[in-house]
Length: 224
Ligand SMILES: O=C[C@H](O)[C@H](O)[C@H](O)COP(=O)(O)O
Image 1 (cartoon, protein in one colour):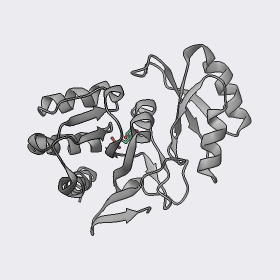
Image 2: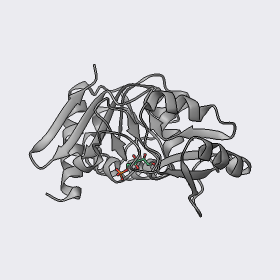
Image 3: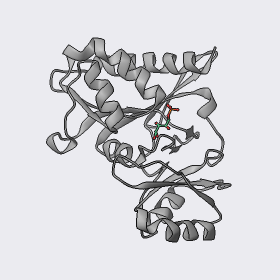
Image 4: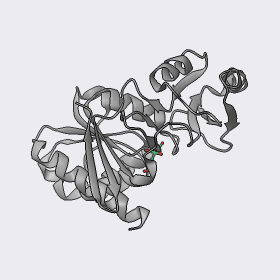
């Protein structure tokens, strides 16, 4: 199976996962990226079964609207029953690296508001230790060089993602050569660097359910 077919399989599985829980007043949290896009494309047919969605990026908001799904402001809704999103890496504890598409800050905010985070990913995203994928850090532009120097002290090789401006008007630094042994501790440590808006470690609030696409089928892992 191709990577795209595996992504499509987990998007289908996520639809099956949430469908029984949809009610007229349900608002879903929706992520960003190629896997989330496949999920959005399948969500359109269920559009009359729930109220709408909160999007983690302008791109996902546009795609949801194209499917006829109402896009709501996060500040106008309460707790979301589900947040559905892809990942760049995920480990056995359902900790993730996210932000390859620069949407990490809004993703982390929407995920924080959700009761259950459903991670949908093809098998290539599953790793024993996070860090092979360069860890994205969203920074306030004027702090970029300072943050980069602090990242070097932590052992990372920071690279400015040139030409990328986040939906929040900020910049991205990618941390190369940065294998992460304790994701929760590192997430907190990175958050303490002045000028960091968000780091791409989703460990304190990892996924609750992982739907992983493999050639043998979709593997489902639940954290609790
Ligand atoms: O900023 C982007 C997000 O964190 C994506 O969820 C992540 O990069 C995975 O994207 P994809 O499904 O395209 O591999």
